[in-house]
Image (cartoon, rainbow, N blue to C red):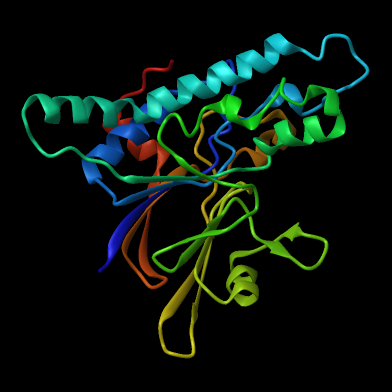
Length: 259
């Protein structure tokens, strides 16, 4: 039986950036009621660990805590509309909406693990569980471990070759992985199509990003990439009909107030 998937690209939540687009996504989720919601990774940016310096006294616990607080707030905004919907449904004795929530860890979340690996004395002090994704209801998938749902493989990014470098294009994605695959990690959207030997269609999809802020390292041109989320309709055995939903559409539909 065909199902509907909603895919949320990298959000890179961090202190000091607008987050109201997460509420927009939550409202859209409740409106469209996909069976599965996939967060493709890098929900949290964890910028305090990006340039970690083990030699400094201020390993910056407060900034780490600020990163976590931003991620927790982001999750509350994203899932708030779902919580409110189910509270109303329960009060009215109506059916609640409980989608399958899947989150594949990204390289930004994996910064926590890399920091601990580089400095073992931090074991138990910093841990990926600090993000509390499971507490929010997500089934989490380890970094770079694909998860297959209805014949579609999801991962923060797929690798190519023995060096483990990210696949560089949507076309290469289906050529190398031989099945429908969806990944994040890179700015901008790409899509490619292929056909299996049995005639079923396969799709390679780079979903882009879903955030409002600009990244300084990308400069002017790099920040002009497409931003939005995706609805995959009629998902069955790797086939689906993809529909991009731009952040501009969601802004117009649900408002412009920044948080």
